[in-house]
Length: 330
Image (tube, rainbow, N blue to C red; front, side, top):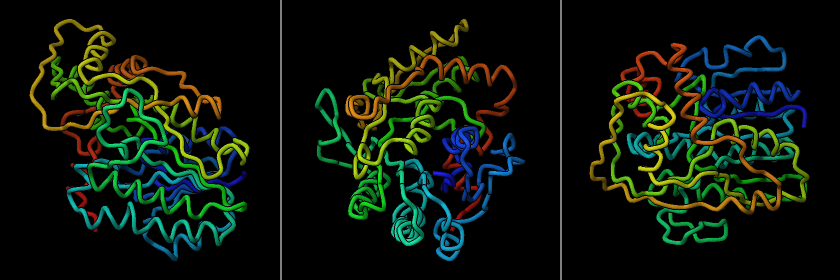
């Protein structure tokens, strides 16, 4: 693998992943709309092995022009949380689902050898079983997760000896990124604690698996190196700590170590709760996370203290739905 095509490479995960790919020696092509700022990849923009393409993954001629010559695709691009998805369901479907079919077809036609798809552990829906494994039936509760599941199904059918597909179902990602999201569980609670000394927990008993952004990006890099026979046509959960939202709030309070932080619990109608097992990926690929939720909280605190997260409660760019409303993407 020499050249990697990263869709959504200027997003929350992409902004941490792309520099790691460059450090590992890959040439990287990023396609992104850059809705969250042109400076996301500022630290590596002069790297001669980086090509940044401001474009839409629905633009078939653009994909046909840019994908040939790439040995691998890491597909991150999507409208990436339920509220943002529901803001404009037709737009979201066009990006998350409809665009997936030509992307896969062009990849195969262009000689791409490996296609890594960032799915989501949300495809499981609500599960009562103590450990949610990859072989359990999918019960997506929202259109966002339903179309992730349908994309998985399509991609598996495309698998052949010349086109290796790998599906990863990460838990909710947490921690600092240059393209920061403050609409994810750990990050939300940390932001509120830092800004208001008050953590508001809705419900609290829902179980939420998490994975540190450093771990999930290390996994994507390593996915380019795994032997084909170990990953071809396979699905892996990728999580780490399974905690309730209330336990996460307690972890945030403990690791910020600031006096006067209050935790307030309020009712919620968000029932999503699951406890994913990541035993398969550890057993078959040897992947185990090295970072913790506590580290993610401390990393965010360091970024706050360094002035890297100004106007954290009001700036649109930290919140997917606010940005989607502001740009009115069609």
